[in-house]
Amino acid sequence: EVQLLESGGSLVQPGGSLRLSCAASGFTFSNYAMTWARQAPGKGLEWVSGIIGSGGGTYYADSVKGRFTISRDNSRNTLYLQMNSLRAEDTALYYCAKGHVSYHYGMDVWGQGTTVTVSS
Amino acid sequence: QTVVTQEPSFSVSPGGTVTLTCGLSSGSVSTTNSPSWYQQTPGQAPRTVIYNTNTRSSGVPDRFSGFILGNKAALTITGARADDESDYYCLLYMGGGIWVFGGGTKLTVL
Image (tube, rainbow over the protein chains, first blue to last red):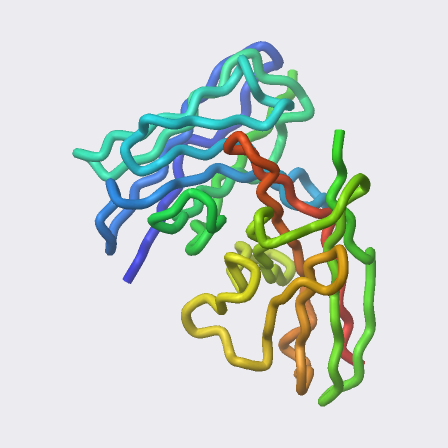
């Protein structure tokens, strides 16, 4: 069974940094694209960042480009999102999602999310 | 910046059929955009329903089908049930590794 467990969310001040993790199990992690998406309170889903299986390709929404960095450790079956220069508008529930072998097929299985609150 | 458009809300009777759509503020949706659809009930994580335009995710009943309808992506639900009442989000691939979600459609079954 595919399982994704996000962690690392917390309350952080504007301008601060945070690193989210997503521990994956139940599949061959290195074969699959992975994604971070978020959902602000009461709002819709927003795609944040994606990474191909090898880690050789990384992609970002304009809203986070230059501030967030996605990475993966295929030896630890773990996906990361390093978030710097956080803003109030980054406050959201952050989901990790397993993709497909092809990056171009979107998301497959979703985690339960971890909450990031940016506030002074 | 291109916006992905969805109906804000839709209503269907139990047992009925409903088609939700997903368009672009500029241009047409095609299979190149690899449309996918996600179902989300309040307080729950999203669940993948359709990916790559028309492929049902594992465990999704064949009451759900995805396709291209004119210049939009579409999701049809037949034999609507009370537990289909959810928010439905479409996701489109824009090229260059970038994906964009639509604003979501709140589906009511009554």
